[in-house]
Image 1 (tube, rainbow, N blue to C red):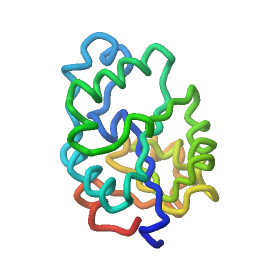
Image 2: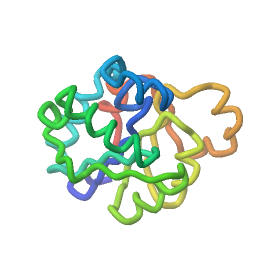
Image 3: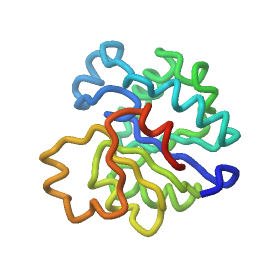
Image 4: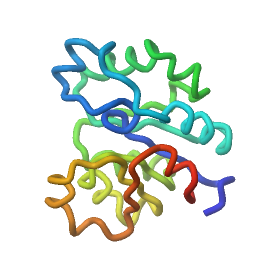
Length: 160
């Protein structure tokens, strides 16, 4: 895929930040750390793709503000050069696919195979990063066309 027309979409929980449940985010967002290499990789993609990188996160309405606060607290936008206007939220995991279609996402990174399963036929390149093995077993039929990776470093060396 030509990088000049690529758009990268990235999940938040378990992909940009270490996995968390919503109660932990509600109680102590500053305790949740960034995923190793995420900021560096995203900055490289923002530069390579002329800013065509977005976050698409499934969360509650209340969590939207907390996620934005986390991103600002840890200097995500400053470190990655990504625009805050490129952050999108939805209420259901399957809704991420519709946002991808609307924004023209060509590559997506998520830690949930269920989410990537909804993007089949919409997003050509899908990366499953550090997944939960039990969740992978539940959605194993969706593994076709999904590339499993263990780190952002791995993604940086692969095709968009």
